[in-house]
Length: 441
Image (tube, rainbow, N blue to C red):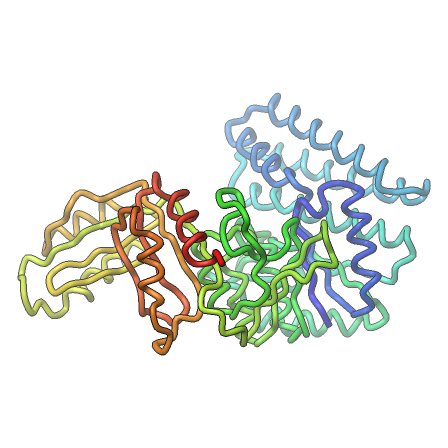
């Protein structure tokens, strides 16, 4: 069994939704199809929620009316029969009636906001399932709210998903296509919640792991994961194979095609992930699995919005326990560290969340000295096969970067990642220089 996920742009127009119908039926493998909200819907629903919070009823009504008009036109174009149009319109009318009632609740709380945002996925999946019914495709809709749940730490309860999905799928053995929502779930209070933005990828991976799928396919509008950022660098190309570790590094450090959390459940259960292009279905895309080629340099990604902290021990040499005290403070304020560089008496770290930087700095200052933080930094992540037996890896990277100032280096923590910190004004130069130095023939 496969799990196929389609993002907002893939379902954002009626002709795109019709193309998805063709894709999932031409491939005869039984599959679970995970859909995001129609492109733009989630942002609009969030904007409606913001207006509801400040009791701007005119803005709420205007945005709801505008969004419903969009869905009405979508329905009219998608369905071909009077029965199909009626079924689709009934879905839209029902959900928008609920949206209006929800935004009328005073005060409008976070609970209502999460229910409101979930409407994007609830609409897209019901509309698509009704379209499959019109087309005569043997299919059913399994609501994600019946099997996807997070715990008190906002982590998915994978064993709960395993049990519930097994029960639900056993009731629909005659259906070739199972449609469900990405992104949404329930929390320990049984309230509607979500897996954060980008969570539809995560949903697909969690489902794939839970059912031990043969493959998870993430369908987007680009031909797999590229070796560099095509928005900045010319002549990039798709990477055909990556390991789970390599893909996880790239996703975390800025590769937009894949949500960073996606790889974890797939890797846990050894389920391959394939990145495919809805605009060019015949293209091979990128396969992420346990094994890959021995190619040394695979891809480059960049993560912006980084701040570097420079910490010096006041005890000078032999300051054991220094690192432990530092990281206890970052843990206390729930601030992850991306990069780390150390010497005998100094530590440099990077963070991408500065919400608690003042409290962190205040506590660090009690036992060490701090330099002024450097903001507007970018981490350049180079991924590949950097085993100890591969000679000249660092030399090729530094030769490519010879004209670009480097603030920090992280190498050797894994055999798949070499990371460099540069000021963000050098980001484009660094990506292009590395592309020329590492991938040019």
